[in-house]
Image (cartoon, rainbow, N blue to C red; front, side, top):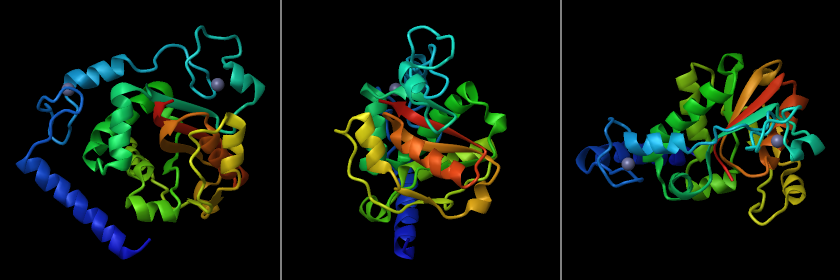
Length: 249
Ligand SMILES: [Zn+2]
Ligand SMILES: [Zn+2]
């Protein structure tokens, strides 16, 4: 990516920090002043978000909420077709406040939310995945054309911060998106799998070989994208592929 973009992104982050100091942002949940420096979601709203999080029984593979724990630990979908990742977990249901947080972060330059959203991801990884087994963290890559439009990859920002919190290497350049895929919003699971087939390529197989990887994204819907990435990572020698997303649609 061009140096101009890197400079723009760095400048906009610096500007965010400066603006925050002069005009403190209020909590996107309740409009009150946040209670921690560098954070914007207040303690009460964060508590409510975590309280409403997906913490009932979930499918061991895809992390979908299941009504009662099943004998094999899988949901109906995963029993029919086992995902290529070993385990995916999401912190929150994709509705109300979580949905608007992800939208702001992704489309409206809401980089100021990055630390808050990383708090949520980190709590999810520590509670629902075996954090000690993870060797490295990587994002779902964005196609260069989308990067030019948006100026940042929301998954990469979260993955980088999460890697730092977990004290793990961040492998930002190990997988790339070789094909820009049309939006998946209106596609059924099979259409989504087809849509992302062949969309990713591993550029640095030596960085992932024999390792347990954690792939980070903002929202998981059917898991087609994460499954496709897990497939290419494993073909290139990754040992296990785990995934964490902020929200589950
Ligand atoms: Zn609040
Ligand atoms: Zn499942």
